[in-house]
Length: 95
Length: 316
Ligand SMILES: [Fe+2]
Ligand SMILES: [Fe+2]
Image 1 (cartoon, rainbow over the protein chains, first blue to last red):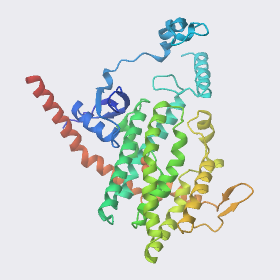
Image 2: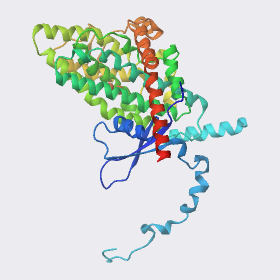
Image 3: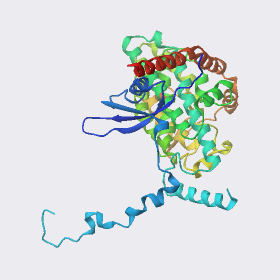
Image 4: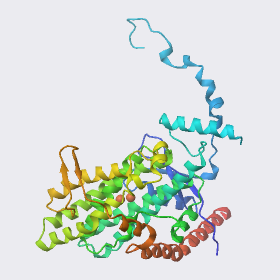
């Protein structure tokens, strides 16, 4: 008899057509198909979804919080990427 | 790690908390914060799961099909709540099966309310109205808990709890407005559940050893006594409105404070139940152990089926 524990899956749900899949939580299941069935019961009991993605948690690669500073730093000095950086003369419309 | 580094990390951690920045699974956190959360969230998960038992007792005897369907949906939600929470515990590095085994060995606790028996149909109403009502009081502030995964699980739970409380209140209201026998059944049930429901908020502040630290970490936002008072204040007028009497002779609205004064809780009873000597402690834990042991073949069958399916895919 195998005492193997079911792997952990991350569940992503599209709540309606036109929106992207969003992380809903995680659960355990023996394989991907069963993970989708379980996700249906655990995360969409009130019609919260029309589509489900599952991915085994161990396949998710994540950035590390302790390196978040240097990782995201390059964007901090580039205020000119935002429209608010530019001055638009009074009287200019539709811009 | 150097002692100096740790105190610096601890300072940064507390600064985040003070600034209402959520802590996420991979962030550094003090061991005691992690352990407190593992204990609290796993006990919360156990409460959801064990809480299915007193209600499951009445599924086959629900008075009609509508009540049966509603009760089943409510119990299924509680299973879902347990699952959200076990997943949240896993984000802290705890082993899910170990936390469940801690429940079975008696090492981990669960809400003491579920150690009381559900003797009549009115108890299904009383559990929804009072027990889920008290749970809502506890859980709404937990939606702002400093630990992200716990807070997010609580947002889902709270959305679902309001249905639980309303279906219970509907049962109680129907009985309270029914025949004299039905009204008597509702009153008798309220008499049994009122005090255990007040005990759900835990020991009084002067005896609660974890409260101060949990509040500093923003795991907790209100003390036990504050939450208990809020519950009494909202629930007493509901009882009055449907013509039931709260079984407390010291209960009186205090014009000065704007709150209800209420009688002394029987703390001996509370500690007895917490220590394992309540009316159903043994039965509840036995039922959970049996569910795991006798359900083990399902886990194995699912593994075998997954393997077979994977092999078939490889072959094709
Ligand atoms: Fe619940
Ligand atoms: Fe509930």
